[in-house]
Image 1 (tube, rainbow, N blue to C red):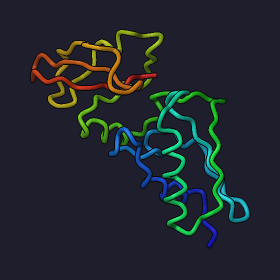
Image 2: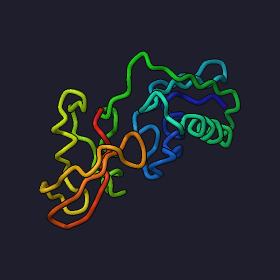
Image 3: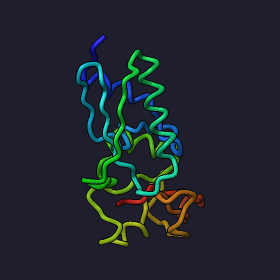
Length: 161
């Protein structure tokens, strides 16, 4: 059964980020292209970081979901021709991050040109802005640790890139 690129994107909504299981790879913006030619599914992806430790797991999860849906000829290429940025996270993905307890990165900001963005994150729990950066290095490369003075809770922010 021949599937369209749109069908493949829909199926890939099932593939979750291994570190943030409420966020699909599609909503994270790491799936950058899907094409189907002669029963061959070609997927291009750009991980959030060059040294992403979950890359092999993500590729296998993609293959597993597609195989479960009858697509066994899958090619996945990793490309850095256009670097991933946090602006690629969909609106649905930003809401999922917030519901998961992670402050989504602001849109249109770049960590390397605006460090103030990292220091002043909105609390995902209470929405307060009276927060402080406690550690720019969270449990993964893409997160930082903050503290909210209003609700007195620590939280993580997905770093803007």
